[in-house]
Length: 221
Ligand SMILES: O=C(CO)[C@@H](O)[C@H](O)COP(=O)(O)O
Image (cartoon, rainbow, N blue to C red; front, side, top):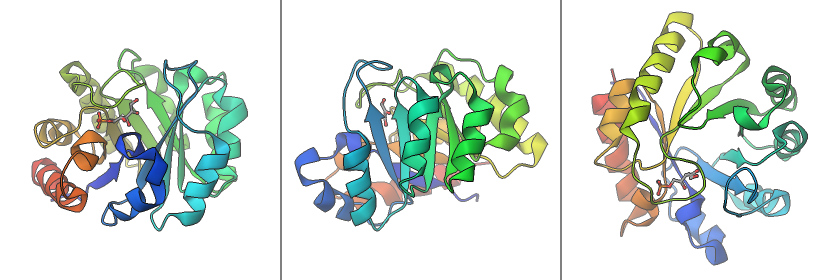
């Protein structure tokens, strides 16, 4: 069985009690922090000052997902906070290779996200610049959406390219991940799973994390 990571999304957490909400997911691999600007996506969440405080109080590493325009300007500032990984959207960057190098240069893992309609093929020759490829399995912007099966072939093609390259690149999926969908995503080749409602909507978030992890690891090739 391969190792899989479960990163709960704080979009489904209680934003008034974020510190306590972090403590409810103590067995997670990382905290997925959704940054939205009401421009790249039609929703607004948190920005640099709040992410900085989360970083200061969190016992878990932070996996920031920037759903914001002008990633070339803003993403480096998130890396400067000392986050474990910073993921920008390729659709929001004018120079993704340069940006990925900048993030790594500032000590963060570099992640690049693709919307459901964005093909992966144009970016397969820059995999060595990345630590993580995030394949969105819903349209970014909101939690609680239905997993898009149409993204499975893209996950498969990305996973094949990663295996062929021998690079230590993670394939993350985000959106609609639950006990009902995680096996499909894992079979396709994803190994890092973002789950919001399936974790925070459960009575015991750590139990939900454990079940998701076991299901993914059993299904992984
Ligand atoms: O980035 C996003 C949505 O844009 C995700 O992180 C969602 O917040 C995941 O929520 P669920 O689909 O798991 O409820």
